[in-house]
Length: 400
Ligand code: LMR
Image (cartoon, rainbow, N blue to C red; front, side, top):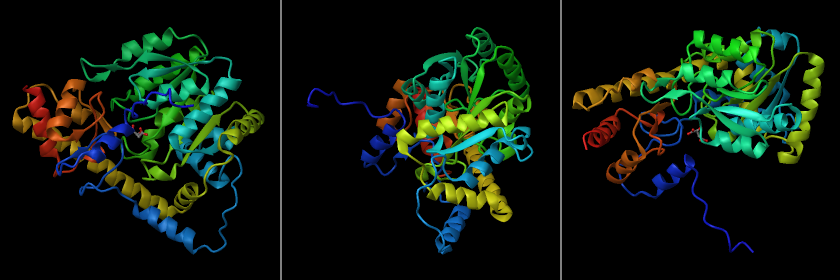
């Protein structure tokens, strides 16, 4: 009965790893998926995560019962505090509801389904370009997806004018997806002054902010600084949604641990919102997994482990920044034509190189370098050893 099916294409991001795995070349390099690697090119389990796991194993009172539909309650509270700030008025006034979800994707999907069911506007505006999964998540959640201008290819920076024009022309009340920091795929973020203008415009038009926070701590190395845009929106007393992921900042990729917070106007409303979120979650996956959220809770509740985490996080962020400098210098040393300063200006895990699909495919074929066809490279996948190989490849396509 399924014989009529056509073979579906691989995912534009995760499919890069599939192709990489099939390549027998010893010099192959995977700069596709945004996953941190060490200088040795190996995945990293944070020390602090190992310690937290050890604590969990040693605790013989721990059981494997189902979590409640909303997940691990302590994890939810600590996650809201981490993103909104320990002194957040919304937390103090008990008007935030937080549910544990399956990483960033799951949090966005649950939030999207909730909005499609209960919010009066069904249109969500996403940045042009954005993470490839965003439009799929929200379309399947039942929302209508539209885009707003964000990136200017000529400056490889923010198209702030276009952004303001497009949000200004959006239907009042529409939902707007905002990347909290380290925009994926461009690595281009608004300044704090620009965020303030965005906030004023959105509030004046009643646009609903839905933040995707996948890189807290990765943009600046500071957890608080990277959460600042969200906190500006919460400080004005208005509503917003926040999807949080611990994949990158705690390296918990495969544990699928994240949270969705909805900041409401009152504690009474927050309670009702939570009751409705449970109706969204239960038929989807009943309740979330326990292990990853327990690791996060152990780390966030303990001052020493928390401090240790911030140091490890900063070390990852710093290594990525050093890769940016090394790649930029390597291109300069080769005299590669073009202005490559965006490599050191863009922030977070990715550089949006400006390479076109034909150049990307040449680099994959001739140099065994794998990346998404939009020219995005994961800086976290580079090391001092592999920078020259990448620089050679970029130089070759830029002089072809
Ligand atoms: C990425 O953009 O590479 C990551 O967020 C991983 C993913 O799921 O796409």
